[in-house]
Image 1 (cartoon, one colour):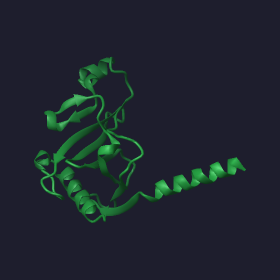
Image 2 (cartoon, helix red, strand yellow):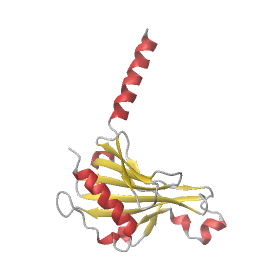
Image 3 (cartoon, one colour):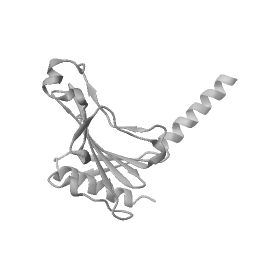
Length: 173
């Protein structure tokens, strides 16, 4: 009997956490491929961490020659300083929107909403998947629903994705 109760509680918890995530589709610039947006409201179960991966150790000559031993995360606000980790504590997160193209490519943009900043994290792979890195843009809020977008000037695709994500966030209750 206790096993059945534990299983029932586990199923209820899993379904309730899945039910919080809302997904929407938007047309993209690529013909026949949609943008998929998922919305996860706070409180999140874990801290948010920018994604990184390297199939080689930090001391490998291939890594050293490309300057990647300092980390695969670029902090754009800090003159593209490299870092090994970037984490946003879950207590600071108001919502998380993940935006990706509906195809088998790791190219994703996460919008992490906090009280003072919108943190845009663009994750992509390079060198045939040997490295996965993230570019982090901390965009301060100008008013309740708009952010300072100057860091995204010249990056039209990220600018469009930000606009779609902000419009989706504004439309949330």
